[in-house]
Image (cartoon, rainbow, N blue to C red):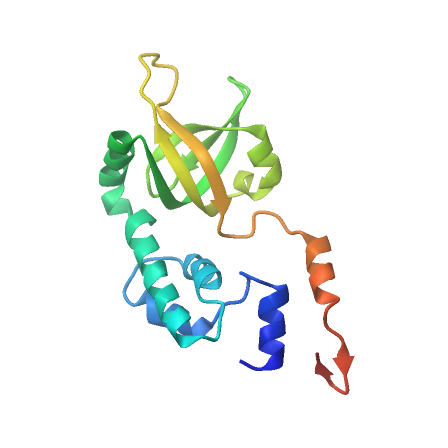
Length: 185
């Protein structure tokens, strides 16, 4: 890794992705590339080959345990019910239900709807309201005899895709670079 690569990894930590690793990890998996890129940025942002191989195995394990394939949605829903809580990777979209004055999430691959979402989460990630965002989420199951409520609870949500753009943080990180005789340092 050259000096520029090291600097980029330092100031844009978790946002740098080695594209060659995406192809190596994806194989025949039906996973959106940006999901892989996000995970690789989290676990393989280094030049140490042993750490990269360990990171690749971690990414594969995360996908195996948490990525929701549509044809396995029933199994994952059952896992959540039996364990009470489970982490999933899925595309989540949110709508405002005007009748109940509440935000409700829909999990695309998991096939669950009307999962309550607090206003703070929606304000922090407004793109949830615009077509949805791929996320890592903890989903809980708490059955209630009340037929008007859903047993599904969104405990935590961490966007994989850009759910908002922090321009100020980008500008601050970008200030670490300056042009020197035609190259960026």
